[in-house]
Length: 219
Image 1 (cartoon, rainbow, N blue to C red):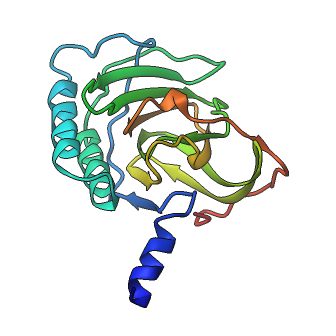
Image 2: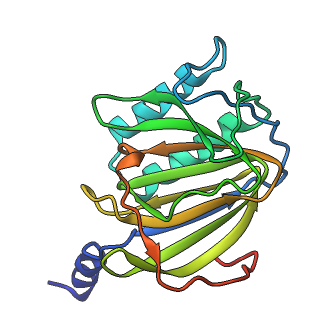
């Protein structure tokens, strides 16, 4: 095999995400989103049905790779532009999950999350593809790398606001891809997430050594 082929094989066998890409719109003019209780259907005329149909069409004709991740991120950010998300329930204890689409054929799902200040996820992994875009609010996104068993250590962080989106592509059939944690720093916030499988299957981790402070460009 050529050296190039050998390097490609080596890259494709690593156990961490093959890519993590971050993008913010040039001007942050996202509308304030609204969310409702877990599992409540989207209101009529919200556009979620058409939006999710476009995502599933992309997922059915493209391989799960960086091209699909970029296409889903860009379509999600475009969907959020100038839009009210249509839900209005928050919790001081945890973020609220609102499913807006799930494809039984390929497992892709999309959900809106509503956040209050101090809401924080567990440190958790993801299916092969994870895309999350922030509609409004301020957040801390932290990434981690495995050190053995269920222990991880910090690998990067970034403070983000509405108009920013990430996608990560990892290995199929695993739920330890792109290990991260999200914290809401603002009074309210909203985000739209797309996954290639049930995100609740993501493995949970413990942080071996917490770090303090985060540079704005840490990821």
